[in-house]
Image (cartoon, rainbow, N blue to C red; front, top):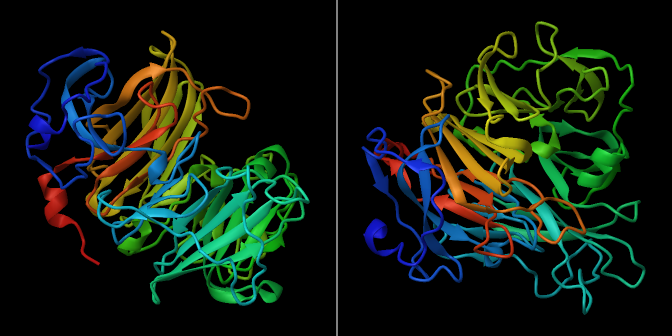
Length: 473
C-alpha cells in the first residue's frame, strides 16, 4: 500500500540510468511508517522514493521508500543531530531542545521545561525575545540506557555570554531533568558528546557509572582549549585536554572485547567527537597527537598516550565498536574513503575502499554507523559532484562479518542542490548525521531543493529477517 498510494506527488529527479539489475528488493518488507501529508510533500512527514542501485556504478535498480522529516522534528536551518536508542527511539537535537520519537516517526515529543527552575541549578531562561531558534545541541545514549545531552544557546542574555543547559534522561526513573551550566569562553559552537565508560572515580570531578564529555566544534578544531565533563549528566566542569605535542606516559588499552551487549550498537558519538568509548573502561582518541599517536582517558579521568595491546596506534581518528565486537574505522583522503574492520583489538585489519573520483570533485560531509545485531554497516557521504550539485549517498553493507563489499547504494533525495557548511553561506548543510534503529532501519540527514533546510529520511523497506530478529527491550 505504501508503495502504490503513499508516494503520490513525491517523486523527484532520478539520478543515474535505471536498469533491471538484480532482484534487489526480494525478501524486503515494508515497516509501519508515518502517514501524514503523504499525498503532498510540501510538509513533513512525507513518503518519498529514493533510488537504489549498484554500489560502484551509475546503474539504478528501482525505488526504495523512505519517510522524510524536517525542522518540525528537531532540526534547524542547517543540520540535524541524529541518534538512536536501544529501545527504538529516534533522537534529534539539531535545534534548541531534545526531540524524539518512540514510534518510528508517527509522533514526536520535545523536552522543553515550562518553568526554568530546578534545585541546585541557576534559573535564567535560555532565550530572550528576538533570539529564539538559535540553540543547538548534542545527544547520545549511554551504555546503561541514560540519554546524555547538552544544549547551547549563543548570546541569548544581556551580557552576551553563551548559555548551556545539560539535559539528562534517567532510564531507570524514565524522567528528564536539566541544569544550567556556564563556560569560561564567550563562543563555543555546536557540541559533540560522548560517554566515558566507567565506573568513574574522577576525584574532584566526582564518581559515577559513566562520565559525559562534551567538546566544542570550534574549540576542538580551531583551538585546543579543552571541554566540559560531568559524572552526573547535569553539572559540568571545565576539563583540560593535553597539548597536541605532549609526551605522556604510555598505557596499553584493551580493545579486544570478548563479548558486547546490544547497547553497544547505540553508543557511537558523532564522528566529529573523534573519540569512542572503550568497553574495558575509558575513552580512546585515535590520532590525537600531531605525530599520529593516540590519546586515552582512563576511568580516573587521567590522560595517557594510548596504544593497543600490540603497541600500535589506530589507522583513523574516526572509529567505533558495535555489539558484534568489531572495531570499525573510516578515513577519507581526497575523494576516497576506506572502511577498516579489526576483530582482534587493532592487531590486524580488513578494508574496503569507496572511490568517488569519477563523479566527485570533493567530499563535503560523511558519517558512518554499524549495527552488530544485524551485521550491518552503513556509510553516508555527501559529495560535490563534477556536474555542480551535491549528491547524498548511503552504502549498505549487509553481512560485513563475511564480506565488507557493499550490497547497494541509495541516492538520498534529488541531488539537485549545491550547499555547504559554515556561517554566512546562504544554503547550509553543516554536517552529516545518521543512526540505525534496532530493526535495522537507517535514518540519515540530506538536503535537496524540495526544502530550504536540511531533511532526514527513515528507511521503510527492510529485509524480512531484520524484522524477525529485532531485539525487544
